[in-house]
Image (cartoon, rainbow, N blue to C red; front, side, top):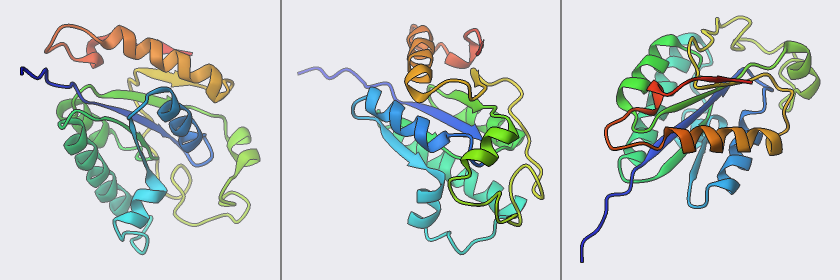
Length: 183
C-alpha cells in the first residue's frame, strides 16, 4: 500500500504579553483537528526551564528551542501551533528558513488592551524583564498575518484558515512567498 507523505507546518503566533496568543492558539487548535499546540508558558515548564531567566539571552535561547521542537514535529507531518512571545528578528528569519510550512501570525494589540486583559497580572505588578518594556521586543517585520486585537478568536480563526488555504500550493512552494494579509 502506497502512503502519501503528510505535509507538516508550523503556525507561529507571536505578540506581547496579554495579546491573546494562547487564546487564539486554543481556538485555532479546535479548528484544525489533530494539530498540536505548544504554548510558551507550558513549554517553559515542560522543558524544566521555568527557573531560567526572562532576560533577552534566556528568552532567545528558549525561543530557538521551541522552534526546533516545532520543526521536529512538523517534519513528522504534524500541524504545530506555537503561541509564544519570541520577538526576535533573528528567530523569525531562522523559522522562515528552517520550519516547514511556516506561517507567522503577529498579534499587534495596543498596550491599553493588553493591560486591561493582563491574565498573569504582569502589568499590574510592574514585572521585571517583561518583553516590550525592560527586554526590547523586535516586532515582526513581515508577518503573514497581522491582527490588531479588534477581532475575537471566532473572527480571527477564519482569517488564518483562509491564509492557510491560499498557502497550500504545489510541493516546494513556500507559504512565506504568498501575499501577506494585514487586518
